[in-house]
Image 1: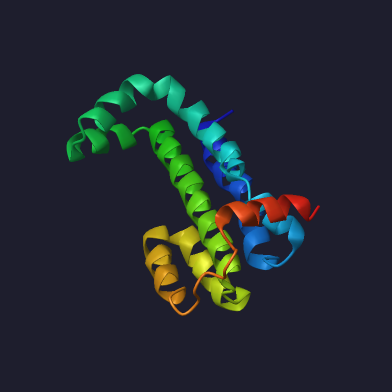
Image 2: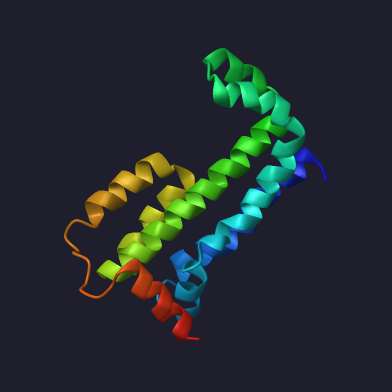
Length: 156
C-alpha cells in the first residue's frame, strides 16, 4: 500500500467515529461505540505500518529530540505520514474524552459540534475552548466515567 494511501486511510478510519460523536451524539449506539478507547486502534494500526519500517530513523529523534533531527526525519513522506496518523489517533482519543465528558455534564450537542470540528482541525485550540465551555456544566452526580461506560454497554 502506498504512503499516500496510508496517509489518507488514517483519517478515513477515524472519520466515522467523529461523525457519530458530532452528528448523532445522543444516539445510544454512539455512546456505546465511544465508550471504548479501542476506537483509535485502526488509525494506530496505520501509524504502526508506517512507523515500524522507519523505527531506526525515528528512535534517535524521539530519544534525543532536536529541531534539526525532526526536520530531517519529516523530509521523508513515510515518516510524515506516520506522524500524521499519530496526530489523527490522538485527536480522536481527545475528541472521545470530550464527547463522553460533555454527555456526562449535559453540554448541549449544538454547542459541542463546532468545538468537536475545531478539535479535529486544531486540537490545541479545541481542547482549551472545550475546557472553558464545560465550566458552567458540573458533572452530574453518579455520572462517573466508569458508570457511563457500564451504562452504555447495558443500553444495547
